[in-house]
Image (cartoon, rainbow, N blue to C red; front, side, top):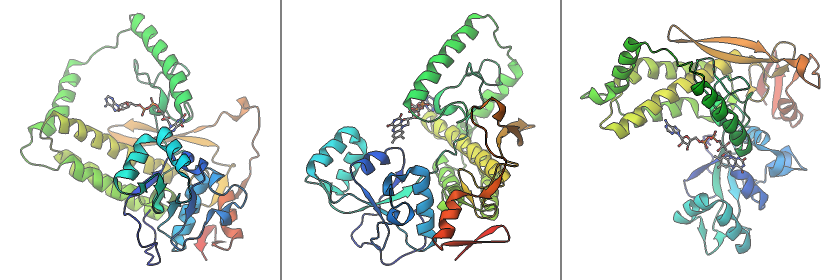
Length: 358
Ligand SMILES: Cc1cc2nc3c(=O)[nH]c(=O)nc-3n(C[C@H](O)[C@H](O)[C@H](O)COP(=O)(O)OP(=O)(O)OC[C@H]3O[C@@H](n4cnc5c(N)ncnc54)[C@H](O)[C@@H]3O)c2cc1C
């Protein structure tokens, strides 16, 4: 996590950083403790009851608060885990544990030192809008699992498997229906030429370089997790610059690089969509904005949907169909409960409708 520099960080910590992804719950389940650069177990302050078990979204916010207070970098301390627990972790998270062993963070069935961690964005995943047959608006296109928007498919193996089973059946029915989509040969030719262009360039920009530029624009915690319109607009400008000036120069040495070049192109599009949608949502709900700290159930019980319009992104909103929900939500506008906590702890104040850091 790229928080404020802090010279009090534990000295012998490896530079490796790890995302707090879904795998984190296994470490927390075994008793891993989150500590800040001063060695404080900071979750005791934010959630004295649940501490590290407070949930990913809560942890991500706590990480942001610690970083804003100059307490980064932040660490997962597992040095107290017993050899038996380490063996269990090796069973359930073999790859992560091998990685830790390869850099000396695990030796002789013990963690040798705290490991630096960073949070990942929670529940901000964009994806295709699909109907209950997992059919997209483009005829003949079906999606399942994490390729769908979270409204259709939440994360997790169970949802991936069940949506996959239904999407597969729907796709097979479509294939058997004889409704073959019509092909525009000219468009196919153009798309093919466009797809192979990076292979034909004798000079240009490598995909790795563009990937790094995208990451530098969108990954900082105060863009991805802790949001402000100004910072997001700057990030969007950087992504638009990549889109307009770097992507047209993508160069691939061979088909392997061509695949990476296309992934980078897709990542740039997802980064743009993500930022545009986040900017459009002028409230704090799942993710928190400093310039719009209220959870706004008067105006924002809506989904933001992106469409392609003449090659550019167009956003629309759709009301959440609350009338079909068994529980009704009050149409009120309140300071988001996470900001309320930060206010109670004296970390922030709200002035003129915006967050001010105390
Ligand atoms: C560390 C970690 C721990 C997790 N723990 C749990 C857990 O304990 N319980 C749980 O329920 N969920 C867990 N999850 C979430 C779960 O893994 C995902 O929700 C699930 O795997 C999503 O399935 P999917 O099929 O949608 O996508 P994926 O599993 O990501 O499958 C997509 C596949 O498509 C391939 N692919 C991508 N691009 C292309 C291309 N252009 N051409 C061909 N192939 C391509 C990829 O290589 C990949 O194999 C965890 C996730 C992570 C990262």
